[in-house]
Length: 104
Ligand SMILES: [Zn+2]
Image 1 (cartoon, rainbow, N blue to C red):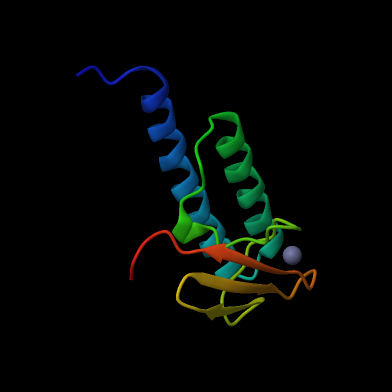
Image 2: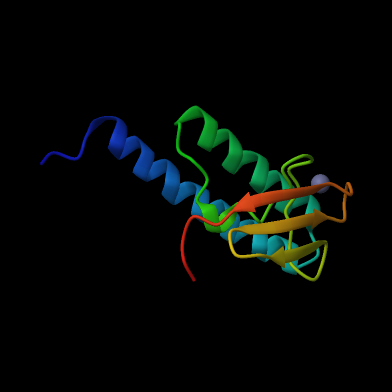
């Protein structure tokens, strides 16, 4: 099989998304939350341009509304149920739910 076309583009996009979330986490750890938020914006842009969905495990790492980087225990509250993770963004006060697509 040849690795070309849309699937390949998606794979690259996904790698970049993971990388950007990693960078966001590091920047946030250094208390540079503005930079962290920019990484998230970039990741979301890549995601929408390449039709690559942000992986489920990363979907609780940013706010659905204000798109800021969220860290459990820092600027976000996470509450897990069987099928959902309830996220509370302390930056803008939004509550949203994320479906758990994978088993833990
Ligand atoms: Zn928010």
